[in-house]
Image (cartoon, rainbow, N blue to C red; front, side, top):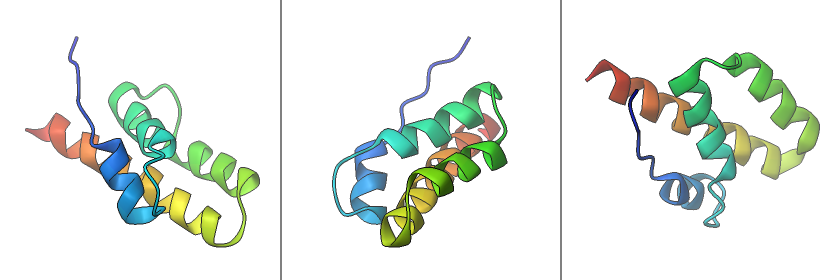
Length: 74
């Protein structure tokens, strides 16, 4: 087993504008575990948020996902 550290609040500050790292953490969890597909997570975010909040949270998920995917490659 591996443990990963993800700068979720930093990602959230850049994408959402507030230190709410939940969606970045979900993206990282998706990448690290494969428990669910990224597409499923993105669809859930689209249903939960709208407008600018939706766009920002989708970006946070993607950045969290990519951050961990890149760590796994190392």
